[in-house]
Length: 237
Ligand code: 5RP
Image (tube, rainbow, N blue to C red; front, top):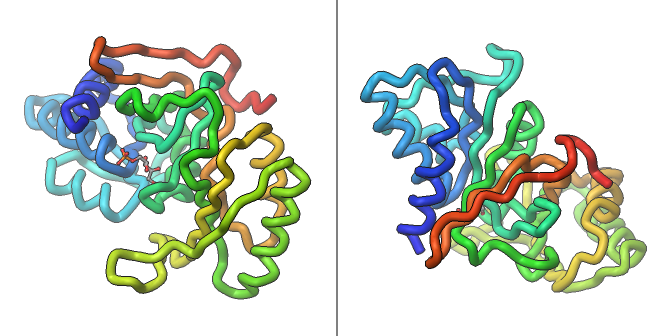
């Protein structure tokens, strides 16, 4: 599996050109991309990156990839990031690693988002992977009830749980928020649910990435498949 993730990362690296400004994703697949990018930088490639998490910042620094912020540059050429699920419209569930907020800000600031994954992430319908919803701890009871209402209105339901870290304490994101993971099973209308969740006070962000991915690079036993998004970036319908 790790070999497949590295193959997908290597294929995405072929899109990178000298002088590009890159969004650097988070997770085990994105980590391969950062490592391979570091090798190219050591060989003379000139790029600059914006990391989507403190973990990726540390990896990029270790690999010698120069970093900047979205305050210092006005756009990114390409973001390369992993995903937890990818559907045929290139809608995504992200946030398994807890970096969804920065990942979405960085993806939205990019001309193109290339999703890299092993092909187990390719699904006909999103929802088997628990949907992460990043929330403010204050008023969480009210926020949870509003989330349940939004789920019902969008035709889904399922258990919700505040994410715990490995040490048993509540998982805290890089932004200081918490994550509620929702086991929905099957999300019938991802764009509708994304809009409903975004409208809830107390929800900082959610893991549905709608209309952001430009292409997906999927590595499997039979080789690599590149799937291009049919609709223009930002088109949510
Ligand atoms: C982190 C993410 C990751 O991209 C997603 O969880 C996939 O991770 P991995 O490549 O380790 O399977 O969204 O917030």
